[in-house]
Length: 452
Image 1 (cartoon, rainbow, N blue to C red):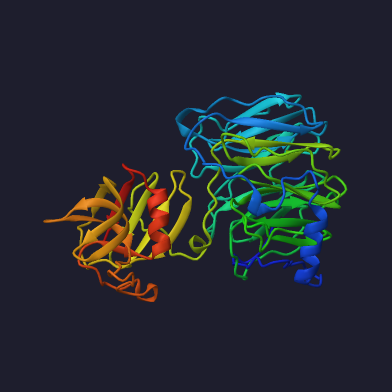
Image 2: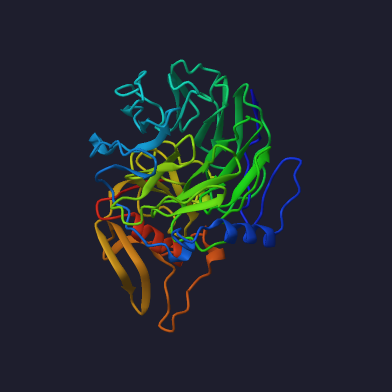
């Protein structure tokens, strides 16, 4: 097994990282992007329609080009998510993988087993089909790999200490190996899958979300949530969205069969084409965001899986200290008084974001609370408290998260650089951007866990 050191990397406009490959300058990347976007495409990223992601609702698989429309489940129990879609070798069917390890089959896709009903340490995040179509692999966020049918087990990261969760998987063309990729761009190779490089040790703007192998197995592409593309080995760079003002993140990159192009899909249903990838349609009108994408073997069509998508960690979560032990489970805000730091944790254990705060030493007392009050602007005397999210009751007032207080003239009473210090009289101060983040992330009833 070969693996990278887990690190970070930066996605910049037109920037390409490739082993033994010269870096393409920004002008080349922009030119490639302009020529790659077909006239019938959804247009520039800034013009893509915005969708409001829903917490629950129907799943759907949207078919484009010659991809057959085969259906999807209307919903899954207990808030489980569909996390990936994989095509059969004929293109006559596909598998859908659930976060609980369940596998659903459509068309000529054959069922070879699943993990449905089995206890998992971490949720399933991706699947890959064997070249024959007679088997598949599932991978969990902790790097555990589960093989079914003729898909052979070549090793896993289960039980390893990972800096960041695994987010994607790709099988080698022979089926005798596979690559696993972490959110920080670390690449882990098993079996005959060869390590060609990674983004380990560099600083990313956004987390890596997908890996795709070339048809030779001599290289692969990584794509980050902001559309930055990194090519390694014999994978050719055909353009990226790095530096474009995307209203919604990229969730998938799928190469054409020739390897001379690829599609990218964003959560709002946009499909971007690069190289010889042909545009066959997009799904901007879907009631749910896009969670995954798969292409027909011949490249004349593709599917978009929509439904509540897997959570992409924000980049600050990649370098944050781990969530404190004993801070509960499920979707929650964790606040450590001693560390003066907060963590936003999704229900499947994914750390969405983490940032420094300013509170009062030893207050409120440790315990479990719930968000019970939300005010766009709270007040404390003459001070304005932006995006107030209350979770506790003080002796005379409410206690909550809010932006750094603003004086009547709009100036803040402390700087962002001073966060991490005990400066509050009782509430928990955060930056203005993080206050808005908490406001949008934490509806009434959200669990708040305070640890010493």
